[in-house]
Length: 384
Ligand code: ATP
Ligand code: MG
Image (cartoon, rainbow, N blue to C red; front, side, top):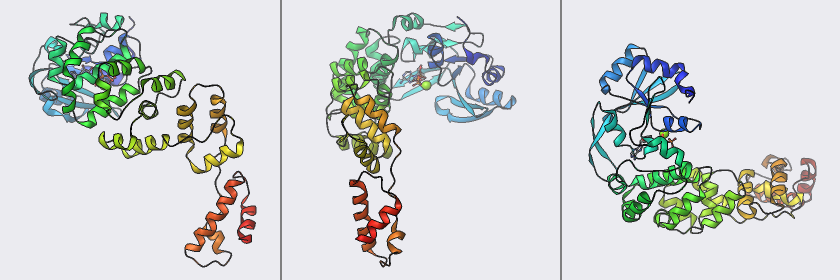
């Protein structure tokens, strides 16, 4: 294998100079081995947190104590953060949080990680340490728990959802041991915070090909547990099949057949996420037969991105809808050309009357296809 690009990154080199015993761990190793883009670079090291802080300080690398009780600090080099965590083993678990002890044993640290594909580490020379067969599983598309699946899930029920996140991205055939253990552990999902549940569900939905994972969640009762409002996997499949953007809110809008405001409240979606979900699910009024006037009217009232999302939901890959989306995307958004001061200029005194007149002319402008100039709108205003 050619060495992953991050090993020749000077920032990573500087960290290795300070901490020669450190290794790259987790997702970066996994993604480098399978030739995918590496998102974050995390490192682990047998050095104690104090020794890490001291070594980074000696090398002039800024170090932020981001999760010190779990042994994690973030080295900041050239504006980018690199998490460095002292090797750990779990002493106690409660279904979500673990009490950890530091160790200098790489295998112990790997053993507490969730899946074999996530449990590998790599030295600065590119040597891979793979204690649990992660490379073979990565090649075979098997998301396998490190150790006994049932035990690992009871330690931390979030791992049920993490299983589907990684299955969506790396999985082929589901690991039967994992699937059986998940079925028995379903009640444990109720103990997870809604923030964590939504964070995982949205990451599953954001995977390039999420349908197999969502369908498996549905089949195993996981989907009903996390989205009890009601779902339709075929609706999601249609959207993905149409090559709509891999956007988790758009995909959620397609998947959800139940009440969207309820879901937004229960899972504590951000205000932006909620507003977008509710806006996308408003009825779509445009069809491929719509003329340009109709498109302009829709654009005058609703943000273009929301209209496009509604078209994805309504038409998906059906004939004619791609052309409609192209027309909509290419059309400038009409802006009603008058303001309150145009009404005041006619001698109307400030007050509610101003808005009434303005809205009347806007309605006229809108019905005529949102094309009349400011001049024409002012003439219409004078007629009223
Ligand atoms: P991504 O590219 O999606 O961020 P990742 O592998 O970096 O993938 P993270 O959730 O960022 O995933 O976690 C980093 C690593 O920490 C994982 O690869 C895994 O080794 C370990 N890990 C994280 N959460 C857990 C957990 N709940 N149980 C066990 N190990 C975990
Ligand atoms: Mg990560």
